[in-house]
Image (cartoon, rainbow, N blue to C red; front, side):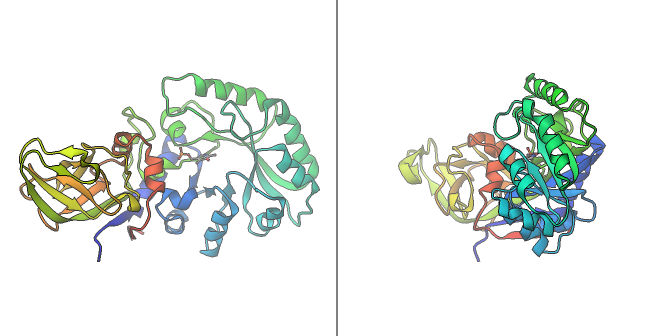
Length: 357
Ligand SMILES: *Cc1c(COP(=O)(O)O)cnc(C)c1O
């Protein structure tokens, strides 16, 4: 059997969820969209269900998967419905529904709903992706109430730059939000992971942690709360071949790496078809036989090469951690010019093995 696999530590997931609660004192929707950022949405939801205030996903397909698996907790659709005919399923399954555009408001006004729904009314406070314009916000709130079809409205917005701790952009977004919601007495929800970890002063009845649940920091710089997170996923494989090469020899596709000295090279069963980033350069950290070493040469589809020259205890069959408890996914992401979110979401082909449920 191919030794590539991702170990998922559900105890660490619960630990990280509790940190989101503890540092904010708020209710927390665990964001498990995109198959829980590659960690397996159903298993993660099952592991959190006893303590979580609810879950958030991107679309009704993801929400239905949770209900089919027996998850009864609240599930928020972060983009609401894409077509008005989803409203009947939203009612049937008690999904909570973001309204981010006037067309969605109009669809609710027109729909015949057998039961009122919970709506999270989204403001565009400056990101300019989705969300109602501030000038439309109060009127949209009143129109929703007037339909008689909503059981509750939560006021929400989303940060564009909360991961930039020295930027004023989030402060400005909060000011836009506060002005737009003036006089409305409803719960609010603004904070994603970087805002949970780095913006304690932002008001929140509900927080929406995603990446921090999986134990990865959204920041490039050190952060005291992020340092308490426990990585949930360990992506590992084994050395399947060892080569001794003299100086001056190329390694891998494109001969992108040439040995400058005699080297011992290990070939690992892991490649970009597993989701390991192809653009990770020579020098990207790995752990082999318990010791830090580095990637060398180009990542292939099914294999990659690592330096064993200074790791004499490593050899055929040695375990390699590509990211996990020792090699942080965020460090691999930075090396590869991406973010841990994408590193996790790209995972495929490798079996997910769970512990701590
Ligand atoms: C994905 C998402 C989140 C979670 O973001 P993280 O940065 O992973 O914490 C929160 N809110 C909304 C609206 C999202 O789309």
